[in-house]
Amino acid sequence: MAEETVWSGRFLEMKKRGRWEYVGRVGGTQAAVVIAIDDGHVLLVEQYRVPLGRACLELPAGLVGDEEAGESAEASAARELEEETGYRAATVTSLGTFYASPGMVSECFTLVRAEGLTKVSDGGGTADENIIVHRVPLARLTNFIAERRAAGTAIDVKLLALIGPSLL
Image (cartoon, rainbow, N blue to C red; front, side, top):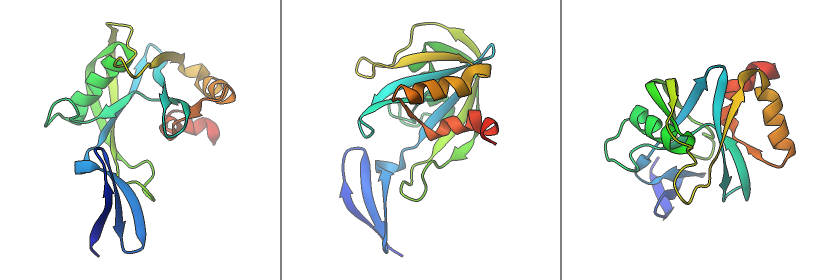
């Protein structure tokens, strides 16, 4: 069945295939998402997200190739980790490609594990991101997420990768 682009902006496209409507990134751009564990602590970021109208607690992440064409997901993840959290990784390993909301968005992301972390700056992202960095003990992660949720912070679905077993 033919795919029709209903609307296209700078970053997103609204598409239709038969009766199915969905959103995709222009040019099929994907993201890289980072699980970074440092001495029993996980690095998380919190930033305001316009579609939600509030801050969201997330794993560090960014678009692949948004600064350098042909950039690998691993290189993008390492760059974003340092930019957002202030930590540099000695190694970055791909854990595979995933789809967060395949019923309405075609976007995928590569999940990576960052190891051998060294703090090199305060992080916080670019000037317009205002990212808050959280270094959370793994033993307190479920409680920390509950506290942020109670404070009105949105919680990214990808955090389920870290707390999933505690929900079962």
